[in-house]
Figure 1 (cartoon, rainbow, N blue to C red):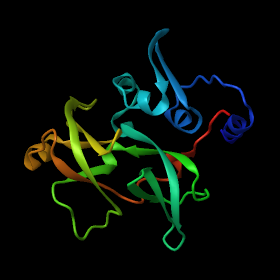
Figure 2: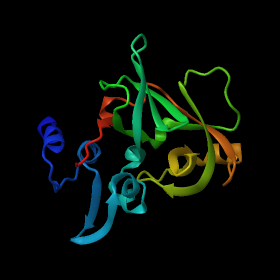
Figure 3: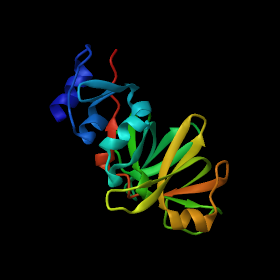
Amino acid sequence: MPFLEELADKVALPIIYVTHSLSEILRLANHLVVLDKGKLVSNGKLEDVWASQAMKPWQSFSEQSSLFEAQVAENNHEYGLTRILLAPETPMWVQQVSADIGTHVRVQVRSNDVSICCDKPTKTSFRNVIPATIESIESYTSGNERQSVSVKLQIAPQCYLWATITTWARDELELEKGMPVYAQIKGVSVTQRDIAITHSIE
């Protein structure tokens, strides 16, 4: 993997890489093509395809996630955290990234690490409390017949975060499309395995 990441930086040519590993996709790809039984299902910018229905069959319940192209804005060495910008006015703290300020990184946020609050919490252990608007709500049944709800949250223009919650939480909070809420994400939940330096072809 380190060799391939270095190769992506040094070779000024497109590289076609075939894999079934989602972690390899996260670290190596800029453009993603999804094939099923030899037929093209989807292709395009990695973040767009990752968020599409075409990727759902490839992601288990624990792998449902959102991908962001972000930028390193600050390192807090005392607490071992890095502040990144998901959008110009949307910061998020993650476990410390070994990268300079201004470096572009790809960040994966797992949907079951995101919680939803109707009111802004005043005292919480979550380092990230992000204002959001509910874009859509989808119910589905996971492999163990447990019904869950996927909530698509708009956190900035053309910037979306997915949260996976229980139907109980949806009903108790009376969540609806268009409703303003707050997304909570632990600073320790996004680790080095979820972050990759963005590789681009000159």
